[in-house]
Length: 565
Figure 1: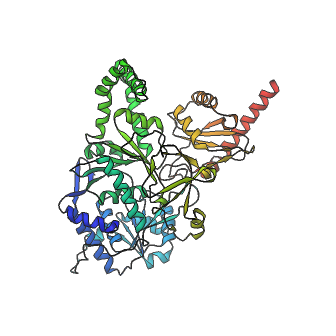
Figure 2: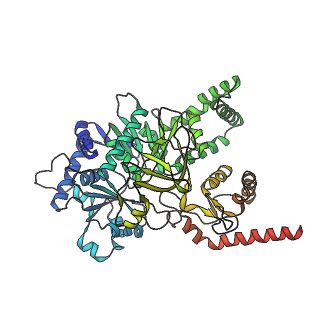
């Protein structure tokens, strides 16, 4: 049975003049056919052979997404070199830490300035023993040597193919090693689900992509597209993403919840500024859809829903192009209200769950059955999932990574008796759909002994405060919970939301005080990961004085109330 690298090369040869990749530049496409991509791959492979690199050695890729990035990735895979993809927008010091950890023989980059910024943060021995090389230096080099064969070198399932560094919500990033067997199995799973989505069709999948290939889910999507008949369109300007989606006119594309939440808020804000007739129609159509969706629609609902679909919903859906079949969403929980919003528009949002250590995916919604908002689908083929202590999700199967790079103790901690301990808390319903509750390491333990998962409370509060950018619940080792919030918020609005929320919660899960922060939480200041996840320990440390002030104020208010009584 061929492995995933052999599958990709065979498909690219069959593609020949068919376009397989496109970059969007303004209003224009720069397209690359299967034959052209293989020609670029051959140039890179010839260069790699001249350097006498050996299979199993490591090379890093540091560049934004592009067809050239894809060519280098495929060339390294074909030569048996371990690919280390690095995020081009990450801080140079963080990138340097990753390079020092895995010590790649070469750092290939599209930007000399970016590469040099990283190299400056590295020890002198790196630059003398290894090299910083530009994409153009390799692709424009002329050689009279016989080009390498147009098929990859033989590989075994246990051979490593990549080291992908995790985003590091607590502590420094770790290099996750993935092997040929991991990726080959995962691509069979992603192709299976996409076959169900696309059905019988005689045209290639049209796929749009804006996430960096240095992230596991994006890398797996890239390889999936290259291993099936697809036209993958790459974003080159995130400030024009709405226009790029319209131009690409995709069947599906991979999303993070932040983008979908932003689309929903923008639509609702825009509608709130329209005339009274449009606002009224939207409200009636939305409410009609909500009742109809749960089987409680009446005759008038059918009228308002039909009118809303024709005059409002269809126009919003047009922004995603005429071909859209589904949006795929992962990396963080998606608010159920947002998933329902897109369902109302006629666009299914298929949720996925996984970690880099699970080759990006454990679960994915089945396109054949109605999605359940708030759930992330069923486990994909060949993968077992169950809950262990503290509702932790544990997974086993051919998708589980062999270990962290140079971290045997960390590897032994998470791989136990064949099961990978994800660190995520979850639950599964009778239909086999999984819901992610929170992270084990984020558990807040009050001095009363109560254990609280903060994420569900934060999500409920976020629904009551749509203007909030981030909400962080604190209280570990203390007597009650407090919250830090960011965004354009009014004190009275937050208090009203807390009064509503606390009325639904037991006493130990209620939020007793809050602070609206003036500082933003961003990846640049180290308070979010590059994927936008909270770095809770860093946040607690940065705002220690604000947190202490909240507790002092709450205790003083309680004491004052007691003295009056």
